[in-house]
Length: 217
Image 1 (cartoon, rainbow, N blue to C red):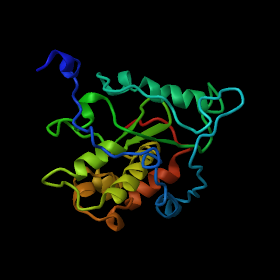
Image 2 (spheres, rainbow, N blue to C red):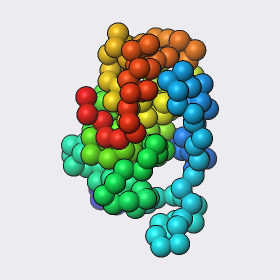
Image 3 (spheres, rainbow, N blue to C red):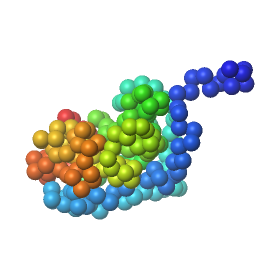
Image 4 (cartoon, helix red, strand yellow):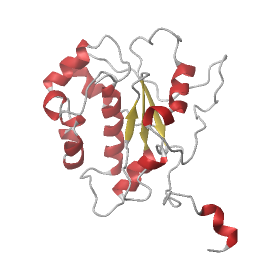
């Protein structure tokens, strides 16, 4: 390896040609209204985080992020927790019936599917705060692999991932019997978007939740 290229030696990404744009990273919440309505939840979401007067993180709702970080989920996702703390209405009380969903490029290095033998984490929901994130480059990377593990197209995987993660804020877990195929990893890979729904028990859990908050399962 030429000496001029030695600074690449620890780079673990294989996504130099990822093609992900800022628009691609915006979460798609198109399924939220129809999926949550049977649980008596009316979705009236906003699709951006406009800067507030007292905390102008960004005029475009974009948040700086670290590249190629390493570590455990809650330890290494501190930036995500900071976003939630910056935008919530109270530092001590929950935002009543507010669920936060952030679109991001990818998670920490060990879960970004780079190289393709690593785990591919499509989304994350905090066990400390009422906030979730979904990772566009990882979704795209897995969709372009051979063999392809999803029967859905990339856009459907992206919108279902967001719905899945926010459902964690209503304390739904990964049990297909309890919570429905939308929450089950195998169903997520083998079913089409129309089949990925909440179970009756999952809908009951959403209705019973007093407000969206940290995942406790």
